[in-house]
Image 1 (tube, rainbow, N blue to C red):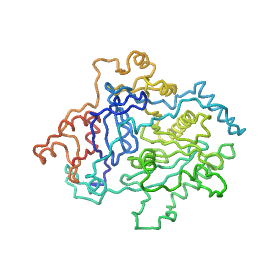
Image 2 (image 1 turned 60 degrees about the vertical axis):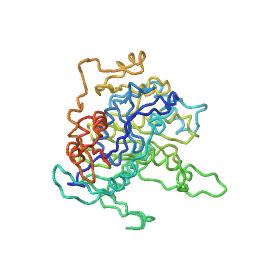
Image 3 (image 1 turned 120 degrees about the horizontal axis):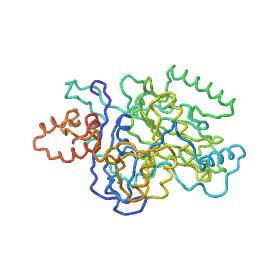
Image 4 (image 1 turned 60 degrees about the horizontal axis):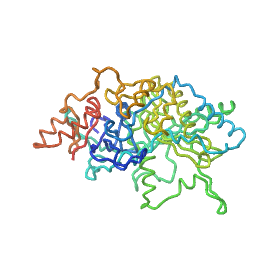
Length: 467
């Protein structure tokens, strides 16, 4: 990659067609703009979600707020100031009673579902252009502005990171991709090359020392009555006459033609976020992670989260149905808020917990507003407004501008479409240079729409793929 610089690379799809809404079940009432992200830096994604975007796997989408049937407002909780409500305390006590006495509460859970959104159907998920895979995945990128000679190909690296999450949790990195310059990574060999994939990879001495330190911390916490899992526990083989545990079903190999397995990986495992590490960042680094909830050697729930420069963003939670009465959706949100507080001690600016979208028009999604104090982002000016000021407006109208200053506008409004960065024939260039190369190009309206949605700052960093 040119100058060892890390890029975000996207394909923009627009948002003209309506899709089925998963909230009100309107067959054609859901409208959103979408992008397929081949790779993305955590800072770019942080800036995008602050403008109302959200990812589903590698697909990133932004609802068309004044057009869609169920407007979806990005919501964040101030983790450091969070105070649990009576219902939150009840859920925590219910879990504590279960862990101490082993008795599951009778009846269903809180009925709130997950503190995240099932977005594949709602977002109108689309596939990336097939023509661009070789260009984006294997291409060397030339930066036309700096006249840098083509450098080695963009590759995807994998790194597994396990660290101490809140008690009874295991946090592991979720299928990360490339790592920025100067940062360490364990490179996965391509199929048929390199080390034997069935053997554990070699480990750096620094990683071994880190794990020993974490194990000591685990032992210390164990002495205090707290159980934290540092490294993954391999599934235990079961006898033929015993029912399969959840782990066997999760790890059971499926045929390549299984569309359900593909959807699982694309939605819950695939992530465009690059693993990044910073001296003033959290020890586990930034990127996408799975938080595994273990009970007596069994995985009972898995939370998918993104750790970004200023927040922990909750993506999804799935759990064993036998434990539905424990209100694991709400419990996991409380644990993730506690986890955000833990990370903030290592990285002071990481102080928010994002719960995805708040949908006031859908009663079952209003529970997200109970994690106080919280803010909603204004869909026109993209400033954060306390939810208490937003709710009266949403009672009167599904769509609302929360910023009360009539003269306020988007601070990152598009000012110059010519400075939008594009990737064309493996070369990075501003859109103005691209239009000179492609005389008669008729995509300016599309590029202008894309850039206005991501904002001028992101448009000058993110590479928009041009076929």
